[in-house]
Image (cartoon, rainbow, N blue to C red):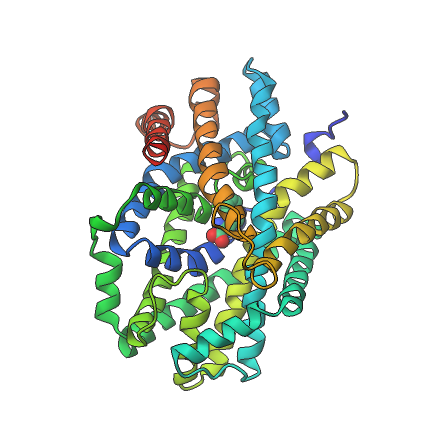
Length: 451
Ligand code: TRP
């Protein structure tokens, strides 16, 4: 099969552009929708603490490994890994890492788009003033009315995936970069405002205690695995996103520094989201462990009470939709880059083809909220199973393969060459993490869940 020359892929125009794009990918529904409800279900403080350890102890070294691998390969995820494997005299079968990514990202995007559609719907309804819910019950029934309506959910899913296709079709510098440069800072500022509001007018003290006082009696093997999956999910790891964003990365940019910046910004946003949501949860007697509806059920209550809530609430859901968009483009990109290389089809056609397939598989997730809500396998809906499969199996196993490959199969000299901006000592620390700490920690976690 003919593979187009590596020069066909564009590069980011500057370090800032890459950082914005990588932060844009990392910050998304994972931080604002998923992190708070997972922390709520995992019992609060202990989950948060374990999560933080995973982000910096495992997530950052894996991100460094993944970005380096992508930059070295200079192609779409499967071809990048294959090329590096061959260059290093290893089996081309290692390209499985890239396939895990392309397929896993595809599956994640299929349900990600459905949830992002909810954000679009909430944005519209808030701006239109249709969402003046004054208590938990009214809010929950609004959420139920949206999710229970198959055609509505389908409509917003279709709209969101179309937006994703549109941005991806425009390419790296025109599409991806432009979208993220000013939107991320705006989201951050609005979030800080919401935190201040919630802490003052909601049950701030209780929320802070809930999020930061660890109660380890709630921690089980499953909670630990969930925290690991969430760390990978939130940092956009192991699904080809960082491989392909690394491929677009100019050589003079420091990967370790970038990874630290991305992880810190991502974690900051997740914690802020928790601090915005939980004061309202406790002030209104809502259920902290209620699951995926949490952000949609809590924040509208605060927006209904605050002066200017229509604008502030509408802005919040607008920025959430945009944060989701800068993540969804990074989930479509691995597949589109591969299609571009192999089928010799242009970006536009690749984006439509990939996005169209995602839309179809997403139908299963749309149905999970209404007609199929009672149909379960292993006690989970279609969407629940996709989420479990990607978060708890594909991502951790993919991350394991990445560190084993980069740590043990790629030569020290090649990696030193990729990570040329740091000192020898820093490099040795990273390498020890990638070779020993990360694989062993991941094995220990798998073992504790399976036994
Ligand atoms: N990190 C994004 C979020 O938190 C989602 C995402 C984008 C992702 N690309 C990814 C998750 C790659 C896993 C792998 O919303």
